[in-house]
Image 1: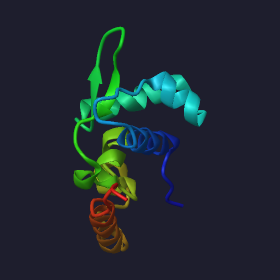
Image 2: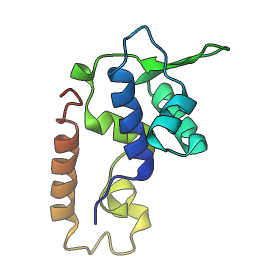
Image 3: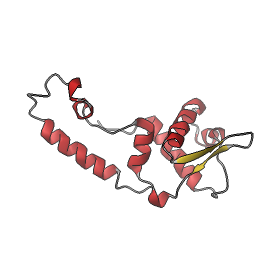
Image 4: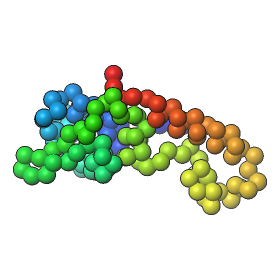
Length: 130
């Protein structure tokens, strides 16, 4: 079954939380963690991943925190998923054929590739703007 990981869910929660705040305000990991009941350590790692990918900006210092780097209008679901979890593949062979002993004789790789391509297009077409 395909499911969003908790890390992706927490990333989406954090992004939408920041989007609901004035752009000049910074959100801290603790503030978001406390408000939504999210484990602080895990949220911190998710926010770091979002920062590395340029989705959020990390402001360091005593009054530091995070803010969005761009508006939700330009942000897609797939960008957040890939920032937090890496590329999306529905089968291991899509990422690296060496991970599959049947790759050369496989009779489902073409349909799986088509599904994966459609999934990629779909998640990168969903805007996070309401």
